[in-house]
Length: 422
Image (cartoon, rainbow, N blue to C red; front, side, top):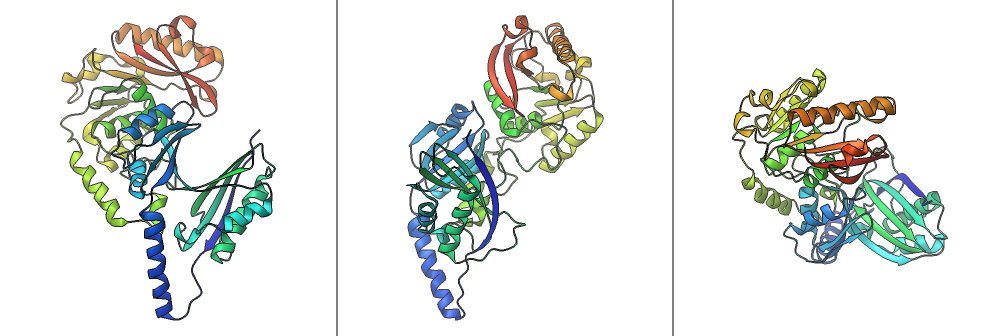
């Protein structure tokens, strides 16, 4: 088993200089080094994804106007080359990635002393903010450096040796380093995202057992969702599918409402970041009429979704109501404001993430629920495109074989995504 460690430290890389002129001179010299060594150079980045989503992420990255065409799928994500502004762009636009890492160093180390020495030789003052925390996450495979806690400590000691920084209050994790060791080959990466990218910044309060936004975006893409077409989300919960479809239909970047770790980097360019956002905003699509219909049997869930939509300025894109899925029909949906011209069996997508696992109960109860769901779909939504997430072990074969099946991993469960037309 691959060991993994997360440890939190605090660093302070400010220099103990009392003379103001000397301090200003050092700042100027450091700024020049940052521009030459970090800003002007092409770097290798890694967009980490959930298992099975690598090729979706690859497609997203290839659609971006990156400065370098070197893009390739790697285990656990997609590797690409680019300048810092390409890293900004990836964080802003990628919908299926979990985080974006910047490769800092790659070297061999077969002892803890060698590891600490090599880490201390990295110019950390070019990458880490002057003050803040340091989080170290470690994975190790087939290496003499298998003790995760010891690796974390030696990495931290190496950073301190370079910066001369004391240990401070560990309440703020700050920067996040990822150390990957495979057969004594060490790869050091710096997280540019901060909070995982599924946190779009539009849903401060989530419902019970919500699906991640990155997975919801993947489901929509796999199901062939076209931004602007009708999406029916009849078990919306906290509204992850509805919010994701609304942002896609309005052409709002995935990271529009949030901040990122790279905004605290010494090399961060606020001007470049403002320019990227100014370029994105004119491409937003006005909300002429709702293109998403969301409903839930729990009134609290519907109200929570309405709050999130209002805060993000997306209320005109989504119709929200409090109804049970088994009470919905296309005719009933068309009665809501703006939905009449959207009801078209050739263009609508109905997406379902029913309760499963502990939220539902026994396998028999789950199997009964999914049997009833597919009966409902065949009776009232014949001809519609559908996407249904279900536990693999409870799906009746007759139902599953009439749809395309895609492996789907969420919450440690072995699920399957069924897509196709009813």
